Length: 340
Image (cartoon, rainbow, N blue to C red; front, side, top):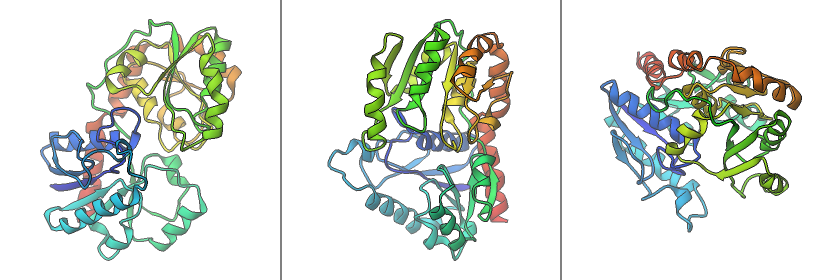
């Protein structure tokens, strides 16, 4: 099959640091190539892929300090994909919904994965206006927020099977991975670690353009004696940081559409202690791969329980449910159904 994958040009594919959507697009693209398909990736010019790469910008927009507006590049990229539409059986978009007006006359030529939260009135209004556009949810929790969309399916994210290996958990610390934001609540992770009597290592992006007030409130906590703040961490650093952790803390405060870092933990055999919002109850198997808790106190009490979970069993759960090959085959089934 001839497939176009259209990624946001904001981050490199795959990203060097934080960037969940771009990471998933990379994993899907490479898995489709492995399965023998002809794939073209529309992404920033510094992206790394075994597919054919087409770009409208020389590097990721976040690396272009003079770029003050991302929207023109999104439009240029979608236009480039549209002008080469005849080369593909199907075009798979990961760029939200800017392409909807261009494809509504032939909706089955495109598929859109929705990587963002859907519980806003603006998004609901948009899908009332484009009921013919086929879309994929990344969790059932996300999908329930938009019942009137044309759902082609729900597909959980996946990681390459050999991207991470089973860790030992011998580092004696808890780990937080993500963003310094009110949605991710690293301040709660810091308090959970304090109550559990363990150090907390934080690998997280700080973006002052978002949650500036929250970032300033949390900044003093990053200097506490039991907190070790690393900033954004690379793919190479994650193996040791996640694999050596006693557990990953995921004290989110929003309807998480998926939670990629949670399955990164499972791939390392590291249990996850999380608040039960959004997709997290779909991802975790309570008592097997981690624990769902309601508050900071329950999270601290779960730490010694998590430390006793068999890490090999957690890794096997990842291999059964969350590999990139499984994700790619699920998407291929939807591509074939759309194309008839």
